[in-house]
Image 1 (tube, rainbow, N blue to C red):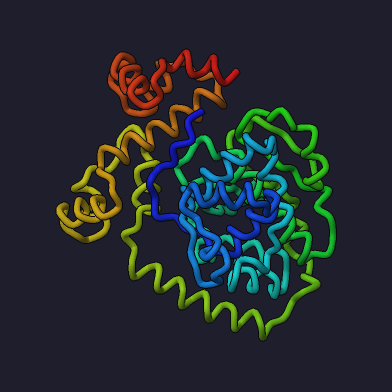
Image 2 (cartoon, rainbow, N blue to C red; image 1 turned 30 degrees about the vertical axis):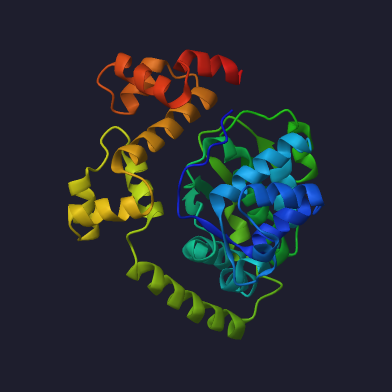
Length: 339
């Protein structure tokens, strides 16, 4: 698979990058790999540094191959403590109930992490926490989702003081070759090939009081988070937001003019913004279509005609031509390579 990362503004703190560095073995070999991808030792040691997500993901991907660590996402996720997430983590830890902790995690997630979203909703007797990827790198799906799902599980177990044995963990990708290892990391039942990446919990857990509850600390954390949210809202035109809007309706994506209206700016401003991010509207459109197409070919049995239609292509020939340009192979060849 190609490891070419998609140009994006996503960044992670040096604390996250250091955690990855140590999980991968913190050796000279790992440091050299990070350096090859533009991540220096000085950056890792600077607590105020922000590390670009794309080169970090490429470094991890390379190390997974050379060090034979296919389950790196599980190892990384096990090491991420909720306190690593700054003010958002403090808010979760100090919540009064598990329900409030889940609510705060979803509400303030973007203040700490931009390459994924959290969505929370309810179905009958269950609360569902869904992980939605926004990083745009299909090759890195498994690592990201493994790590984020474990982070969420570990956070809720930490605040509740109990193992989530009644949870159901659903992944939207096929079982990896090391699928048997998942039982060593997840407390509840694990399944694959789902429609979404979900942590499904009984509603009864929402009222459980957190053993780490602290109203005063929670209030201070919320004040900080509200300020951060205001800063994010004041700069609403972000690559993450643009990609999110384009993914919502892949068969009828907003045009440049539509995006300009949404962000209340001129079309020229959108074009300049994309140029500053070293991309164009067409590249972003191709990026979204490529990710959704490859995900569908890997994780569903939908026909190629159906996938093309869902992505807004008027005929399958145009879709096949575009796919060949993205992946240097036909959709059917790509699907065979994944099986």
